[in-house]
Length: 163
Image (tube, rainbow, N blue to C red):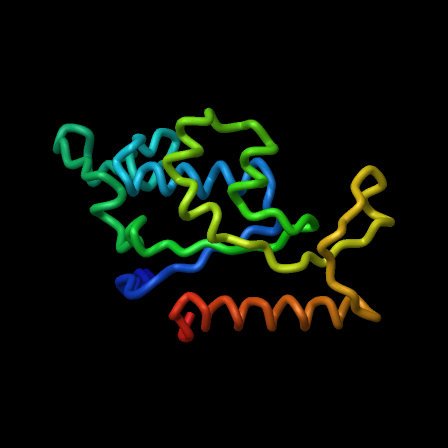
């Protein structure tokens, strides 16, 4: 029988980069920030609310997953991403109209500070969108190299170089 892998405990910050800075990503970021500020419960988050059963049901050992696994704390998450429009995450969330205004205002500070990096975008694949905030490169390999550079810059900017 194989030994279970050892999972190192989290330390430092965990960077989350989203491909696209639209309704889905800004709602995710806003939701995390609302939970951090105590303005919402992490409804829908398996890692934050769910439990895991250990042993037999009759043993009644069901700790919360967040206490059982060495997961990074929500306070240590840092966000960034790419977008085909230059709007901040706050502007994108406001335009998407997914969040209620009072929730959006509670997280305006964080969302306003997140500016998307230029996106790798090819009009041939997306006919109904015209990206204005896009990378210019000769080949897809060159675009991939630029994305790798973006990730390195994000790591430096967010104070974490050893991810």
